[in-house]
Length: 207
Image (tube, one colour):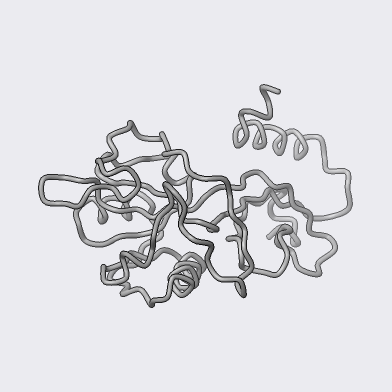
């Protein structure tokens, strides 16, 4: 759609380890240009501890913070697929501990990333449900029907009080604002990207 001129800006995401480099999507298309908006963690989503549930794996207690507040995790750990998953540090999720649980997958790309992350942990997940609706994923987890992975932005936009979120070591998602054509961008496009950067990185605008 960008190439055809139907839209001026497209928001796209790429999971870390999807390609050998860490640049924006676009491949060999020299007309595609991307601005990194977010470099965010991917979380393991489990049911928050209740009377008959195990406690959250990172703290030993249920996650009762208000919606949109993410648990602080360790610094990002980037590894190549050949290197395998870095050891789960303090506060990081251990996917292998959930190898026997049912899993909830998302879109085709997210499902593929889930399979790769679980493979790094040494198992193949038993996928019981598939939906790309982040709110539905959290509702299914809160109902005890499985566990899932979600990016940080999904939790910031809407957080179910009945789920626990724990960052997965080495799992990151990058969100890009993509444009097409020779620079400079039209003033309206440049302004839109500036606003998106401020919204995605509030610390940047405060600096």
